[in-house]
Image 1 (cartoon, rainbow, N blue to C red):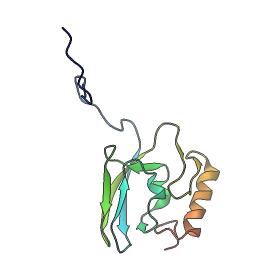
Image 2 (image 1 turned 120 degrees about the vertical axis):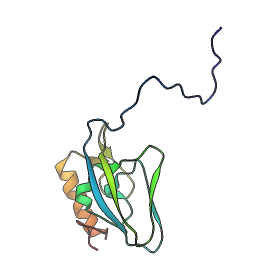
Image 3 (image 1 turned 90 degrees about the vertical axis):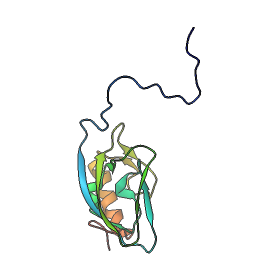
Length: 130
């Protein structure tokens, strides 16, 4: 007799799963310049995260936080911390969040436009106005 199916059950195979295998990672220093906490989710294009976070946005273009899906990193007011980011995979397109990228992460013209918008819209950090 077959084992009954349990809704929501996860059946993991044998062995370990290596997350982000072969993908580029970088470390960034991030400071929250706001007067309230800021939380950034696992799949956010980190380049477009909250304007009050100070970090090298050019280095973050095309990257997301290197954390498990469905989790987030919280930055308290005035807090500075080191985070690891990982290159986005798949089709490598980004739309929304703050409307800076709006297209292919591998298109040099889109990156140039996005970096210009960072300064124009008052985002903090290198490449930004603050």
